[in-house]
Image (cartoon, rainbow, N blue to C red; front, side, top):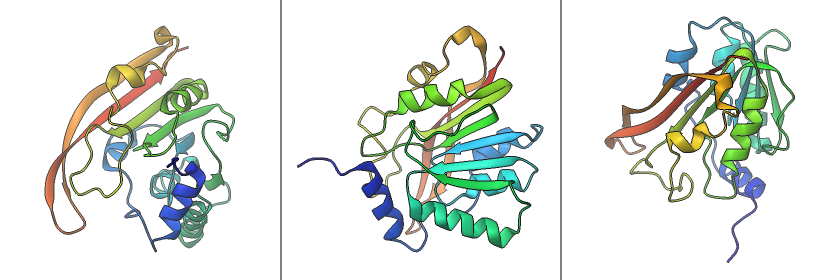
Length: 208
């Protein structure tokens, strides 16, 4: 049996539920980005737009891209409710890396950009790194281990590693690694299960 088409898989995932995510910003993202000067940002695999809307609310010209048209429609609807200024929170439907918008961006984020179906993570992160402006940052937050209650795989058996994801920063001498580590966080599952989860966090600044 062949794997499902990535576009079909994610569209079915979003279309099959009234809402998939909480709508809240990723806590690691907010803690690392809160004090940065606002500029132009891009969120990869933006889902229903929680991170993009948080950035837009803090003055960023925030753009999100996702493979699912349903997810993007929900994100746009949430942006309309928030009544942002034109251009401050925008969303595009696109497959990555081919559909990645042109840069430069002062901040590119990828929160849990992992998939049980075809996802060329290395190529996506390389394409993202090439679109970061001089002095801008790339922030990648990933599951280092799958949540115990997860019904969906979060990627291949080989979960993201620091060395693996840092290959996107090429040439390496052009980047300053500000954060590169595993972080533990407490989480509660859909049925109230408590667990300690481990995330891989990378924040890198482009020097030249």
